Length: 398
Image (cartoon, rainbow, N blue to C red; front, side, top):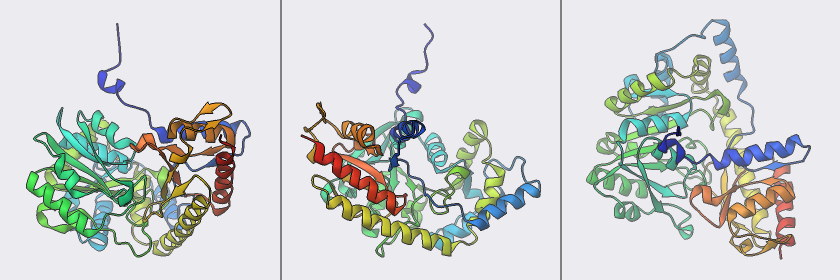
């Protein structure tokens, strides 16, 4: 009997996109849905970036580019790494991909052999374990404690290193919980990676979105030894509201980037040419637009956390970065909604969507039962209405 591959069969679909699809279906039925599901800035792409794309189209820059990206964009990314992170990369040590997600997956494919273990602090972005499995690796989860603000403890990483450990997937600021790893923690993690001899894939896509004076530190900036073992991943989607433009990039040792480029040449070729020219413009300015966006996100995170904490049975810690909050719904577990028992955060999210048209993502998708993730990349009016509906939902439980 003909079947799909075992590798494909073990991959779970994205819970975030599944929730978003159901929310859109309800909207199509005419329902007023408040969507806290997908992590996507609700701001328009800055005008100067859109103008650069128009100019690229008019200039006929619509053909294939080098697989690793245009030289001019890679030079601009090198400038960004130096300016923002204190990292020196040559253009040959940079690859441009169709989104940071592709950069992470391509890095895994370049580094991981069949059966290699990849450490993933939990809670984690939903795609990390699936991408590891797609690359033939084995995800090994490093649990993070709620009382630590979900920040990973270096000793927990060290405890799970084995002879098959090949890499650590690090994400700060974090999706799904918004935590930012302090410099001291990163220094300790870097020392473990160097001592034990494994790579670090550092997902820094939310680096520009930090609050309350928090400092974003790239682990690769902490010394030449850890830099030689690190692939730094970033992109334009979050900081410049360019999710649909699909441009991510990575910097790392030349031999790794060369392998990533070879892999990408056969899987997707170059990223969109017009988007590359737009991102080149994005990295050349836009600090005022970015500052406005960060201020708006800052106000929203304070609002949503205050309203959640004022709702009986719900709680949320104030995140330090990104635009997500993990909401504690453990008080709802075991209660009933119109005769249906809520046994998991998945049940909570499903019932909340069906009964109150509020979309959140269940914590099981991130490896953290008893919580749900909300994105506050929505307007303040929607935040107020969404939490009001959640309060009604909680009050209805028996």
